[in-house]
Amino acid sequence: MTVNDPFKTRVRSRMARTRENYTTAATALRRADAAGPGSAARLHGDLADAFHAAGWPVQVEEFPIAGGLRLHAGPATLSVGRDGAGRPASGPEHPDDPRVVDPDSPLRIVLWAPLGGAWQRSWDRRVGIDGRILPTDRPARELVALTDSLIAAARADDTADAPDDAECGICGDSHPAAALITPTSTCVPVCPCCVFDGDVVYAPDAVRVAAAIDRGDTAGLTLPAGWSAVGVLLSCLAGMDPGPRLDVPGWDREVPFPPRERWRDPLEAWIWLPAAPHRPVALARLGCGARLGRVVDELRRTHPGLRAMFRTQEHRVHLGRDEPDEPAAGDSWRVPEQILDRLWPAAVAYAVALTTQTVERPGHRPAWHVFHSLELADLFTGPHRDAAGVHTETVLYLGIRLICAALGQEV
Image (tube, helix red, strand yellow):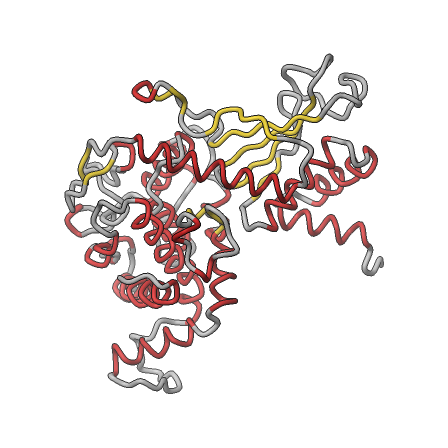
């Protein structure tokens, strides 16, 4: 048995950040090592490492596309290829293959955010970032910082240009029409704060909402930040029994592509963060956004006592005591530890995403009216539906407030 093999350690590290299988990760590393520091494969790997280190969710394409090596980092897609004669215009050719490209030709990085963003006629331009060429003479970490600043600026510009030409059917707040989602067959469009409101009449169709969030993300950068929290909550609840199902057959009724990785693992969800001047100190090491798992880690690092504070607050609310006791067998109101583990990321997502949404829409009502609309019992079925709903609401009501206090956000 090989112990502490350096190459296997690198392979497992790559697997952790790119979610590739062992064979794919090992093949990519061997190709980069063989090609040397001037290779597209090496630059591609360095970028994946740098985005992962910066807290972005990273997914690497297994095969070349249109002559380039692609990676997806949050809302961004980057392709590493080559300029010059002989560069393939399309197809699976590898940009380091001397049979089809000149290996001495300059490297080329192209950025899209999102990939395939639509033309917005009223703005006379495409949304987001469409094929921006990035410099190749900078370290990968600087390219991540540049990508971060470009995406932040594009989101701010697109959000400013999007007219508030529609209203949430529950709270009446004005939003761009594309910012609202119809969660049920009642055709009532709602904002992310009202999607679970009891006045929607029927429980939201989890697959319908999740698919709409995916469509909004792939169409541009302006989907309100709060929708990422809604998606995280649905993803967390999908693993509970009972709970809403994000089943593939249901998904096929809504969109022609399979669920993204974030629906299988809520910690891979992209969470928008406030612009740098308004970013909470606890999240100051992050950029315009990050994967939820990194946000959770940063909060744990800067405020390690939040979970204990939740238990204390839970006692204060239910028993009128400030000091927690040992759990008693009859404490049915107490959120089970495994449920708290599962739902805590959703509380973090709501606190951070709605803080961002409030900062990004300074002329609008703050998003904290969400506390009047988290009516979640109808998402559950079966004999334990009431307990599941109460536990979920408890985690969100108490958790969001505690996390916002840690972020310096008044709710």
